[in-house]
Length: 551
Image 1: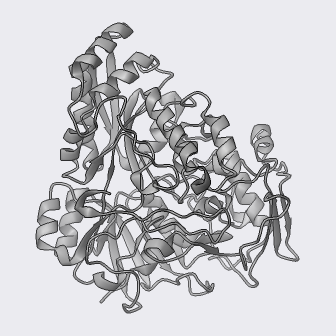
Image 2: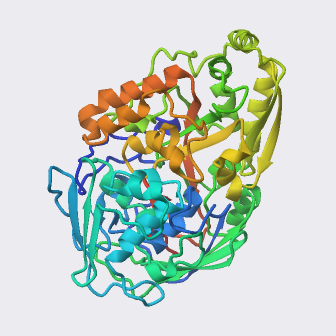
Image 3: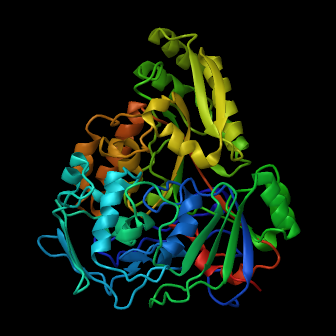
């Protein structure tokens, strides 16, 4: 589907927990699948670091990669590449239950003897406490939990000690019963995310915290949240089916993308969470024996436009941006790693919601933009000449993406400038309504293999209850999206693929967001790493560090 001939097989998702989605592309011809390799040793990883370390509050891939090793849920994802990596498997629960009550009730039983990294026992009641924290703090993924009966009532009352009627826990028996408001085909997928993992109630305050113990194959120690943290093996965590991790210690340090690229070349770092930018051609040519590109995880890039802030409160302006988009120019900014698209759902979702929108209502994404049409719409809006601030973060190539967007807005009639802030605080900043961010960079990488993972957090009314939000439009978009999601969520995505595709087209036709492409992700390792066996490319985590190993 994307560059280099990558093509994902059709996703074949089931409504129950043993559902499996097909591989998100095979990547390059080289690169390992997680087998073999030695155990032990220490490695260093370069990163822009997590936006948050609190498991209910993080938003980014850079947070998900380490935190999923520290906080395992009742269910989790298999530590494997390709098709296998999309499998939901038992985590802290002994098995994945078959739902009863018309698909609305799930009963889980905790494994015996589980302990958190601080040595305290894992209790059934800790799960409800986690869901309460997620809802009370308005974690960015909180909308995924609102399908639980009583969750929205708890969220509305804003009382820490309130009850969520749909969760019943028995600490003595180690059982957790969850009742949903309605059948939800994404429930188990969302349950596998780190933000719904049980944590000890006594050490999980109803405020953001970087010191919450977890139950997982690694434990985290944060030396400086903006500079460095380490993961070390949690030798007491032994759960069948969950990879205990091959590396004993992982040190993660903050670096700029150019520096971490050079440090991987020089062997000062063993892996980088980011994609080489200016050095991409050199890396691909000289170090192809330890470099690969994959369409993993499925992703979409677009420019958000705040519907509550001028000039983007006017549909003419939002339409103008769509007509003026030059995806081919942005492809050059990505050094060829971007595939232009008109769809919100990535092409890897073929068979469960993706259907190429052709013709694209705003012009061929591989063709030339219609600048004259855009200028006419800006003139019609009455906002010509208005000052606009384009927001982006400092991770390469995002400043260059912002520069392109600024220049395009100036070309169609605005007085635009850029505001670049640090990656760690970016999404939390623009996701706070009082910031009044007018427009700027955003993207979305799959959290779990379900089309609703793209729609609900980014364009629904339900997502606006989170703090910070992902819905940077600050409005449900397009009108009626929430009602459509309510109808589709109970059903297997592949059974209603055409309806998901219709929703995708409705969103694009509205012009409420400005989609321009999907990217290939890279994996670049030092010579010390066993690239052939342990590159760990994963459809949910991007790279599963539990699979990393040294030669």
